[in-house]
Structure formats: structure tokens, C-alpha cells
Length: 298
Image (cartoon, rainbow, N blue to C red; front, top):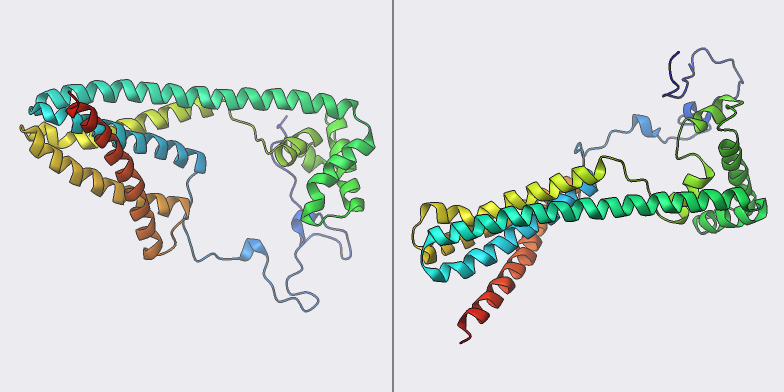
């Protein structure tokens, strides 16, 4: 038998006149003088598909660290005069840093996932033990600030509790069947998401975070090293490295503004590019300044 992975669909054409249609199929556009459009028919002028913000965050962490730390190291090693020594030291730091950053991303996501599972067990046990009035107060505390009255909050509580309690017994009507097919349509998940502000971390997320941060660090860290592969004099290669790193920061800032939706026009892309260059350049300059300071001490 087919597993219940999708909610049922109702045909509007075959619906009986006057029949109560499920909420998912209702649309009041064009009725009772309304001139608005259903969201399914709306056409957004911006056709961009935004990237998952968690992936963007990991890429930014990896690239920003990769552009800053190896640049400061290579700048400090440039005082040795030979690009070969700078490349050897930079590559060693680059590999070690990418592995370290990847492990850090993995452990951070794993800790978030463990925290979510612990909170889920705790709230699930509390839901089973708490009386109806206590749960209704919690739901109202979440929905009340959004303008939901107490009667509606009570109805929401009853619906969520019914779905959770009947999950093992099977749904009794079509709309409740739709809710029971969704893991986030239960009282425990509702309290976790809207009360605690927590969401479940997928099993593959720690591995994806580790790979993204590690590769981001590698890509970002190799950029300041590129001039040293072709210019034998380290001091000259340092100048090229500064120009190249600055240009990459500008491009990276503009692309980040594009994929995150922070920039909608050229001015937004320019702001993103300049802000990224300012932050990354300040961090790199500070790191280089510290290296230069300790290098000059007797």
C-alpha cells in the first residue's frame, strides 16, 4: 500500500454547490466585491531563489576566516623575504585550519541537535502530565501577543492535542488527516517551535555544515596565497595579495547580498560589497598589525 506522504486534493469543479470546502482550496478573490488576488496566482517581480540561510552562514564563516587568518599569516611571513617559505607555512596553516573549522561546525550542529532532542523529550513529557488549562495558558501566551483571543487559542489547543493523542489511532476526518501527516502539526512540536524557538536539526546537517565550512575556509584561504606561487619576492607578492584579497571581498559581499536577499538593486549590492570589504579588511589589517607588532619587538 502507498504510504501517506501527501495530503488529499479536492476538485473544485466536482464540489457540490454550497458544500463546505477544505481551507486549502478556498479562495475569496472576486467574491463579495473583493479585488485581491490569491497568493498562488501572485507573480513576484523578483525571480530569485534564495539560498538556505544556514548554508550561507556556514559559507560566510568559512570564507571570512579563510580570507583573514591565512592573509595575516602570509603577511607576517613575508618579512622572511622568500615566497617559498610563505607558501609552505600558509599551506600548512590552511589544511590545519580547514580541518579545525570543519570539526567545529560539526560539533556545533551536533550540540544543537542534542539540545533539540532533550527539549523535545522534556516538553513531550510535560504535555502528557499537564492539565488542559495549563496547556491553554501556554498556547495563549504564544498566540496572544499576535492578536489571537483566548477562545481561538483554546480551539487551537484542543485541535493540536487531539492530533497528538490520535496520531497512533488514526485520523477521523480529512482536515485532521492532513494535520496528522505533518510532524510539525502536533502540540509538542508547536511548543518547541513557537514557544522555545527551536527547530529540528536534520541528521545530515552536521556533516553538511562541516563540509561547507571546511571547503569555504580552503577556498578563502588559498586566495591570499596565489600571488606567492608566481612571485618569488615575498614583499612584492604581499602587495598583489592585498589587492586580490580586497577584490575577492568586494565580489563576495555583492554575491552575499544577492543570494540572501539583502540587496535588491545595484545600490544594495554595492552596500553589501563595501560592508564586507570593510569588515574583512579591518580584521585582516588588525591581524597583520598584531603580527607586525610582535615581529618588531626585540
